[in-house]
Image (cartoon, rainbow, N blue to C red; front, top):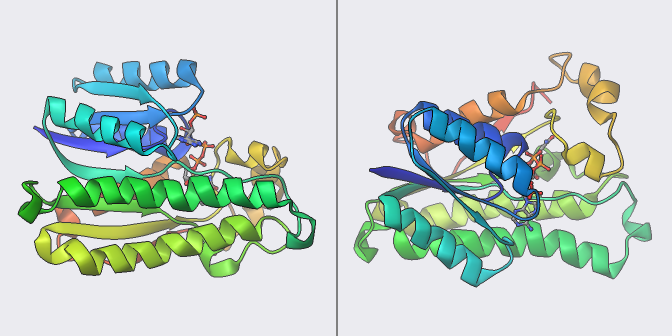
Length: 246
Ligand code: NAP
């Protein structure tokens, strides 16, 4: 059976991907770091759609946890889909005002965590490594293009790395059966904005987007699910904007 592994599946965009995958009949293994109530609720919703769904608490920076996450996937089927979704922002600040600890944390979770997750996928999914091939999707951001000035350029720089990783890893393993792409969401209505100290961000700037509104987690998930599916079979090394024209 086809299994999708996703980091950060408890809430937001990750949750929408988990439920969209379940609706397509794909078994799911997902991680979360601290919100066990949300993780349990998402897993229950996925199972109610008739698939198997396993959950593992752990930090995306922890390589042993990531190996265990993929092992859990392998224990229920063939991992042929991977979504590298876990990500964080810190509070709104200019670069001049950021501490080294904050920059380190943002880069560690968003970049090192993504690289370690992608490495685990690249060790297992390619056909030459005994895998079935498949598709990897990285969560980048419109901030990778726009920079995130006066809000979080550390995050923007981290997401720029996701665009580069999608291209570089695609060149490494697309000929070995694994496509690798990035999705760049714009302003999406999730709890991540509250983590930046901007709980009203969607209401405040959603209407300023070219389409006149923020996006939903489900709209973002649809793009990710398409890139995971065979419907996108000739797309690799690309960056798909899901940003309402921004
Ligand atoms: P969210 O609602 O804040 O959810 C974040 C998810 O990541 C949660 O499942 C969280 O687990 C998990 N997570 C956070 N830190 C983790 C860590 N160190 N290790 C493992 N899991 C961790 O975020 P979102 O808005 O859905 O964002 C998902 C992805 O899309 C991120 O990469 C984000 O940068 C990107 N993105 C979002 C937007 C937007 O406007 N929302 C725009 C562009 C890009 P817990 O529930 O346990 O905390």
